Length: 286
Image 1 (tube, one colour):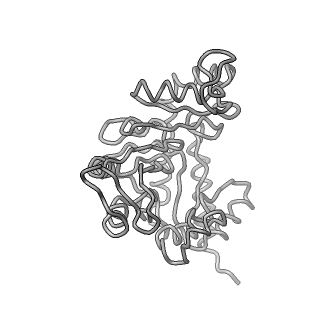
Image 2 (cartoon, rainbow, N blue to C red; image 1 turned 120 degrees about the vertical axis):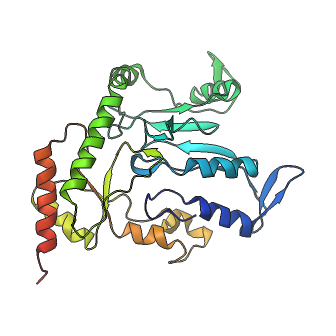
Image 3 (cartoon, rainbow, N blue to C red; image 1 turned 90 degrees about the vertical axis):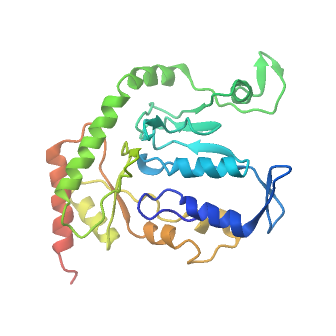
């Protein structure tokens, strides 16, 4: 499914279009079938990208209509809200990442699954510990997915400060918006129903790669999330997508650029980043 070009999140109307044209729904059994391969579609997995909730209300209604599970990827959006409600709490499962660069990050690798289902929680606890519920007795083929105590201790301390950290990110985003006003680029869109927590401050700019190099020449980091859309990745070649099938995703991948964003970012640093961008854009390529 293609993205909403404003938020870069999955576009619910594209999900609807797919369901209406590519699937059949057995109302009696509550099963949605992909007409192309006969497989049952069981869930929708939206990613809340860059720190902003997807149009989750619309997606929830589709899940309800077609008896689908909702699994939220909140890796980049810890603390983001939709109409005052935290992401990760709308679906059966919410998936969090504690990778060091995330809004709530530990010093190694880590993550969490949240759910309000006791049965699911019990199943997940078993799977995270090699399929074991009682030591040395295994009832499932599980994984070693335990969060170690050192990382948990770090996260426990940082969790108390996450709201403050997210507000600092939002303040920095506002300063970026002011500083880049009138410049020939697109600053991040924030939906009126959403509290954006700016895991990334991602602009959309033509001649992206040259501007990124100019930033690098001044010792300013920038990054591209992501240079190649999922449907164009070699691992998914078997799915048969062609160039142009998901136009919004493809065009965004050529123009998005993430600027420095972290709670300790200063106004002077933001002004320096913006000045470098303006200087780069005013320079004619010879």
